[in-house]
Image (cartoon, rainbow, N blue to C red; front, side):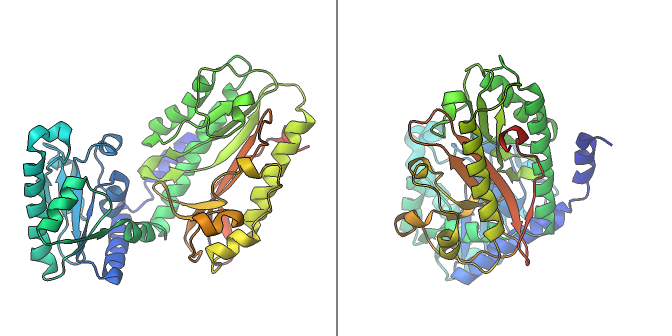
Length: 404
């Protein structure tokens, strides 16, 4: 059986009902713990997590045209894009579907404030019906006109990112299996990239193999365009381009792929292009990055605080510190998520504490490149925190030419 056919077969093993019910339950647990009466979710990734329902996910990232009201106790009301009510039929986490009021000037023009008043009244009525006297309403994000009108209606608007992020951070069995399928899909795309990599191909052409594989397997999209080659590998965060990849160049990429079931695959590799022997400098950069991620993977275990993990993490040489990646490790689920664990040198300014817990999924990062250097190396692994340590979701090989 081929790897692709096994991916398709594995999808049938995911209990979607159990996954959806678990995730909605996690959201409600967090709302109850915070004493909130309910939450309104606009972010399409958060909305998918809480309900299992999706609709034009990328479009909704910039258009506030779809949202859901979830009371801490009571029925869930989804407000969907016009004429899209049928998309949530049969999803047991959604009790009612209503047409959404789009809170944007593009959709409303001079009627924006009147529409916001109508929107706020509808949400307030739901809160009164299902939360009683509790006026604490969490919202992950909302256009300013919506927040203004909710306050006028007497609601106490609180930030909803904290309960959602904490809910998402602990995975159940179905989520873990879905993430493994997403990772295997990404690995198939990476195999195709590796096979296609030869002098003369452009960065965009090479990057397209990951996208095509993801779509073929029912995945959603790739969040970033982080593939670059040669002198474009340093500094990091240079986007994919029409640059032609040449013999003897490094090619670095970060998958950042929302795959099947919407789950995020966040692993990175750096390939070597061509048949020539890599330079000693290329090997040094690669082996340094490899040492960093292996050290930090071995360190990872449940019960550690974020600060403890940061302080014990691999000490990046001063040569590479200015170009360091912005986290040592971060959470991964339906996207990059809570927590972000930063370098110890950055902890007081940018860090926050918490506890690494069993069934968190963390991506351990490394970028190694000197300021002004010719090239850089990006490596990253995605790991499940277990009671004994970690399980690596990926077995995609490292570049042996660069390990010698």
